[in-house]
Length: 447
Ligand code: SF4
Image (tube, rainbow, N blue to C red; front, side, top):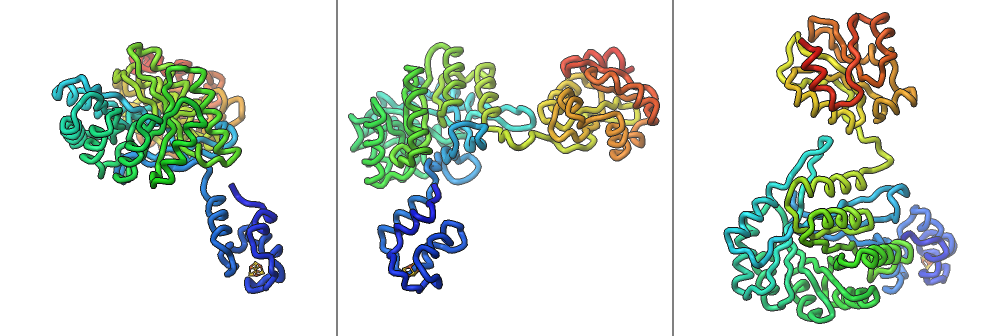
């Protein structure tokens, strides 16, 4: 949180010595607040003032990392707003799928393989499971270390290590310390040992407690003992309490600059009921979990949650667009179908998916509508028959096919006459209103 000029002035020696080049400390403070000067330009600052300024320059919620540096490293936190419409949410939550300790080695390997394959594509972006929650409860130290090492060597994703036995946890973390697993979790019962494990191995630590006061005390204790990256762990079983606590923790960090709760949150929603787990995960992702521990590894259950996360963490101030250009779908030639759509990502990828499903080679002419879908673009005057004709010309579509048939969205039937009257596209076909109708339409109309 940036300091005001008066707050900066209070940190200064107030001697008006002019060594900074300004006549008074107050004048210098105003320049620092306006970011015209650095506080360090005053050579007489004491350590307390330097620390206070450093703290004020640090984001109220810390950015934490799970996993080794590189493509698979998970970055969480550093959120700055309570509500997405205030600006945007920054680092999307990661789903952590469990690998139970009760599975034998072969079954644990199969489970990991399922997690490795949990990668999907939606509106042109990859959405995936990004963590595995490896349970070591009940395993000996040696067995925990061996299992964790074997699984880690075959894993696409970093690990959350789950257990309550300090000996087994120390062995497991030590076996893959270079992979920076999340140590789950320090509680009032095991705090001393688990904080030591995380600090010695320089790994992130989950901290859980019965209430927020105790959680903040544990965080302060861990900070004092050298743990840098932490995550506030809520058990997720009491939905109302979890939402309330995650809200209070975030508000305390962002609005009150309360550093001992200035970390991202996580919730364990794993249960035997996939649907319940799914709903809880989506709910907590919205308010405000950064890691969600789940059991289900079924794509049909995971994709809805991943979709919710993708939607919430899309920047609301930036239109979700694709490049306005001519796209070739399939083995196009001079007989390929031609249709147009808008550059709103969701619209484009819906159309593209359905064209691919139709197996009819097709040119898709994408018109720049500033990221609006068909009806919104029409209502907002971002698309017109004239603009479509100009876009077709600019993209050289007529040079690529020998026919002059153009398929237009069924939501814009009124454009047909004007396009036929004002362009070389003399046979305009009114397509389906929804992208899902494209395969049937092409099968029937595009001979
Ligand atoms: Fe004040 Fe520091 Fe500038 Fe001296 S150098 S006038 S103490 S701000």
